[in-house]
Length: 93
Image: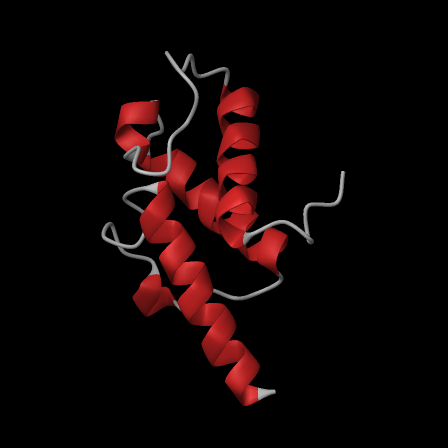
């Protein structure tokens, strides 16, 4: 299913849900916007994979300086990063 018409927030959640499914991580309830990735059960290696998945989903390159624990702490921080990068990418076009 093509998620490109959905909001960035919805698309970030979909990417994380795919990763959780791939890793067979048991999430007690549905994934919330304010969930920390560690609460969901993702590891630092999962976050590396998540960076690549987010880049692919949004067709962008996340600069190395932006790959920080603060930017990948939760769904909301990832969504904010995507918004920021999308705006700056659009300004360059």
